[in-house]
Every structure is written in C-alpha cells, then in structure tokens.
Image 1 (cartoon, rainbow, N blue to C red):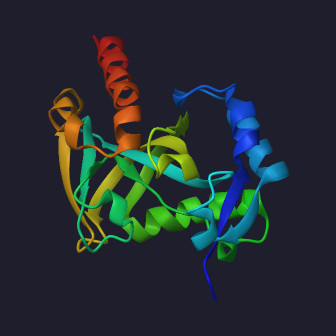
Image 2 (spheres, rainbow, N blue to C red; image 1 turned 30 degrees about the vertical axis):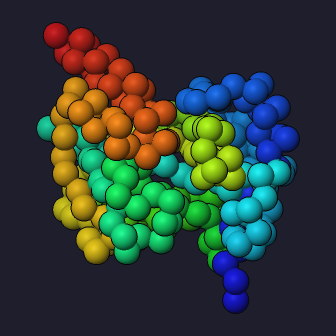
Length: 203
C-alpha cells in the first residue's frame, strides 16, 4: 500500500504564522489545534508535488549532558535525494497514517517512532521550540517543521548506513553552516542562543 502522510493545507499554515518565514514561535496548543482541525492523510507521492499542502515533520535537535549538539550528515543511502550530503541538526521524518487514523495521535506516535528508528538513546528532557517555515526551497514549500530540543543519554545512531554523526560544540556549528540543510540553518541561531542563555545563567 502507498505511504500516506499527515498534511495540513498551506493556506492555514500561512494564517497560523501570519505569513512569517523562517523560525516562528507559535504556542504549542495552536499547533496541535491546527493538526486536529485541518490535518489529514494523503499519498506521499502527491504531497511531495503539491505546494497547497504541507507535510508535518517533527524536527528534534539533540544535545547531551556535556553541552554538545548532535550533528549528522545524510549519506546517499538516505531516502530524501534532495538532502544527500547535507549536514543536519534534526532527527525526524514523516508522520504516517499507520501511526494512527487520528491526526494528533498520529503526530505524537509518529514523532516517537521516528526518534526510535533513528537514534538509540534515552530522552532526559524535551522542550518544544517553535515552527520551521522555509519556503525558499522546493523541499521547504511542501513541508512544515515542528522543532524540539531534546537532551539525551545517547548510545548511537541506528541508521548508520544513512547517517554519519558527531557531537559538536554549539559555538562551532557555524563552521558547518554553508553545508547545513535548510531547516538546520533556520534553527541554528535558536540553538546557539539557547546555549548562550544556558551558560550565562550558570555564571
């Protein structure tokens, strides 16, 4: 059976974000309300070509107890050809109808499934950050990122044939900026700001 993925109509995304681009802070309850009232499932092949729809993607940025950020690079074996060779800060992927027939339940189930598929780790802390809305690229115009920051007790990347990984200091991430995928470039200032605030709070 064809893969069916969770989408919301782009027109409602524009309304929710008031037309804002890039990283947008939106209350989480409004995000869930959008998924609850406007979310539905369509064949992925259709969604990838239809800019009137946005595929909902949880985008989980991982840090560890040493204050390092998980940086990954997508290999040619990874499914999304448009992102091959790019560095990424985000764990996540599409939400499928097989995760649940209910859009909200599917979002949470799918978020957990994607994490478990990609990473062998325990989540020690999790916080919602905001929305990634990047319409400057072909990929971005058909996807909407729901960004999280996760503190992990990390063991390994499960999909080692699809992802290489390193732990990097937040202040060193700028060295990779030109090679980052679009969404990671969008959230990079947010991640660096988080570490800046954390360190100033400890001093």
